[in-house]
Length: 102
Image (cartoon, rainbow, N blue to C red):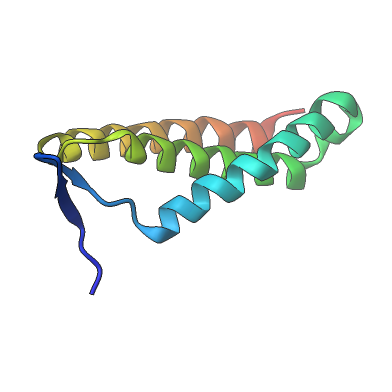
């Protein structure tokens, strides 16, 4: 059975869920090449599909990264709230760029 929190050396912390750990690693690996394509081929920056994939990767990477920052159990609610606020702001502005950007 998986445990959601642990105490190691007297410090309580939350265990990172496997899906969040995988999302952080996969999005980190994919962001580099896609951003390079986006920068080195300016005509590709007009493609909505590439922009949408970049947006999804940035949102997923940022959200999981902020959530993984929390070390102490007592701060997890505050960090989770910040992660959700960040996710909503970036997703809304990114969606505007993908839909209406030229």
